[in-house]
Amino acid sequence: MSFGFINKSEGAGNGISVSDSSANPLVSYGEYVFRRDNCIKCHSFSQSNLPGIISLDGFGGKYPLSWLYNYLTTPQAIKPGSIKISLDHLENAALNKSTFMYEVSQKNPDDWWQLIREANTVKDALAKDFIRLKGLPEILALIAYLNQIPPSEALQLKIAQWEKESNERGEQWKIMIEDPNTEVYKVIKAKGSVAKGKILFQDNCTPCHGREGEGNSIGPDLTDNIWIHGGSDKAILTTIYFGKTEKGMRPWNNDFSTEQIGQIVAYIKSLEDKKRYIL
Image 1 (cartoon, one colour):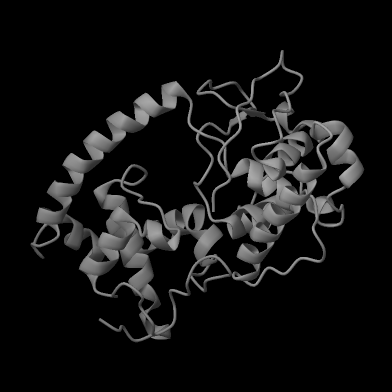
Image 2 (cartoon, rainbow, N blue to C red; image 1 turned 180 degrees about the horizontal axis):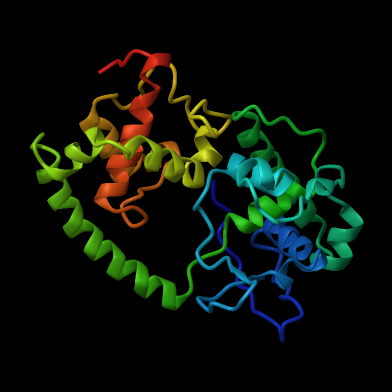
């Protein structure tokens, strides 16, 4: 799902400019909602580490649209303990033609009908994940906007370096998991790994797989007897390390150490009483 990002600039701490709407009307409307609801108060678009400010640098395409919807409307359900305020009011606020024409658009009627088409595209994508919305609410615009935020130049340089290092580690990882006597397999079987893996899982994997691995509208159930990519130690290690980007799961090799990945696998396999593995 792509609408082609529109450029934006940060103001002097009081918001961001609404860009030309002709290219991507829905994204422009979403940018307007972002500014109108003062989201810039808690977010930045740079790599700066300001206290209390969460960077959205490179946020676009990071999560499935269904994840964005769930996080915007029920943030605590996706990230327990989150202090984010729910934006569920945007579910009941319809995309407004007058608002668009006078606050966002250059008063071009064709832009509005393009926005409607784009909004229906996002709505249809959410429906495939069993999220069915009434009408065309403003939350569709905010989702489209957030899904297009590109990486800054500084982040692009970091990403290039990460990818180089990740590729090198990935080759080493492939060699390592071929040997069942290597350290990661020992970690899976080690005493205490299940408990440590459960903490890591619930802190990081809950948004897509549920707090107990039961799955949700985003990610699959890890407690049933169905394995999409294999349920052997090696298969699970591979899935966590490299991800399955075509399925919406990103790689976790830059987030977890080899030991931590082994601990997460140990926790997943501790659910064995609830399932039988399909290899």
